[in-house]
Image (cartoon, rainbow, N blue to C red; front, side, top):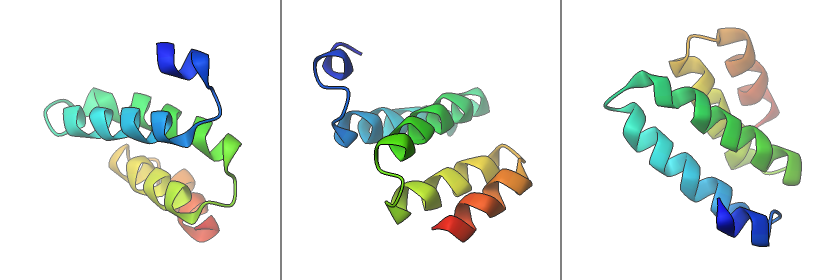
Length: 76
């Protein structure tokens, strides 16, 4: 969190935190939501990055939010 305060525009911080949350989600699905939040923040910084939209779509599908999943995958 300190790194994001020093440079809140660096996408690697958001991607790294997402990766950690997704790793934890393999043990406990409650970590899908924080992963989605990190990806949403990253999408705000880079709205045309297709990998972010794709990964957010995958996370939403794992959360059974199929409407949001489809929307993100179409945007990707």
